[in-house]
Length: 439
Image (cartoon, rainbow, N blue to C red; front, side):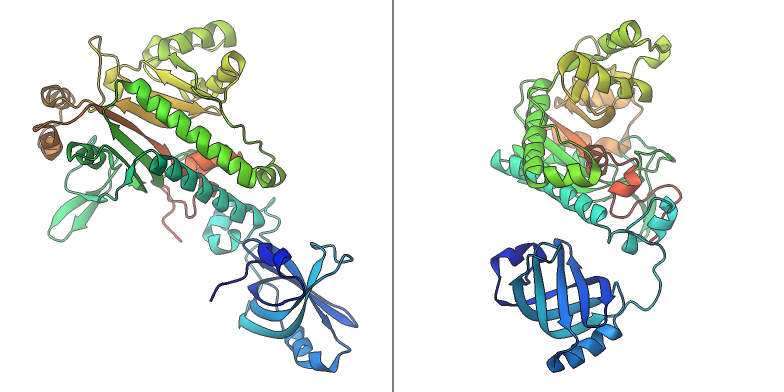
């Protein structure tokens, strides 16, 4: 049976409707009872006249009803201009209590200004009931939907790769070791190797939305031990500029769609404006960024730290991008190869053929052209001290593999930046960090 959502009621005036949801509030007055019913799409007022004999059973139900219980209501939907809540109300003929709230909530989720984040996460099932959190995850769902849509429209195939792997393959560190029957296994840090295997297998363009696991003991506002990654890889590129161009176009497409769908609500609830970016995104070499940050923003670091972006340099890149390019986005290129994975392609000078993408002062992507030539990738692996652990991966390139590249975006971090949320803990459905494994 099709469920009727509360945001669809405008199409059903003067009809009998059946609605389900949580009891948001109850007003029990001398002559009338009011229930505000809520679902994930909105609210509606239920009105019961106590003086009508036919309503005696309904009145008794409401007298024993508790806020946050769930009910199923059948009744007539009428237009009522005097009703402040959307100018409508339901006159019920039947109310069924489908679940009962049996006690006081752990905290008031409608006002979390004084509630500790750990208390909220300990009782996440309550925290998620807030309008703000419901909108947050609707927006997160939408941006994934539209990035997917962009890729589907551009001939990508969605794949699903294993999360148990036989070796700590990418770096040998920051991986979770688990027992796998009679031997050890590891949780995958990313689907990187298997994305590339797909291209070696003849798939021209692939992507995956999947969990990734990083055993890094980081207690920051933007790190998690488990997160959702949006991974993209595609073949027959000319160079890593093709990878940057595709990512920029995909993000611009998705942000425009999300703005059309939720822009006004996001502005109202989160006080954030979605700025649809112009493409192509601006790009600068790492060295040039540090030169400008020192000359124009009075920020300098020792030469030993200039082989990557510091957290503060990332933050300043937001101001730099806006001042210099009128953009919220900035591609940073020309990283030294020693700081990046062995499978990233390098040019003859040893410069990485890849990039980081900075949005609103935070890195959201590392992308690159991959090394697809067997001899070169074997050499790169040996330089990094990788041997048997990556032997299976090196085999992918023995029998021909097209030039290719790709990138990955952390969905939780992307949501955090889009909505101006202070911590990734609030942008994940259930946060996992060094000190949190429940609920």
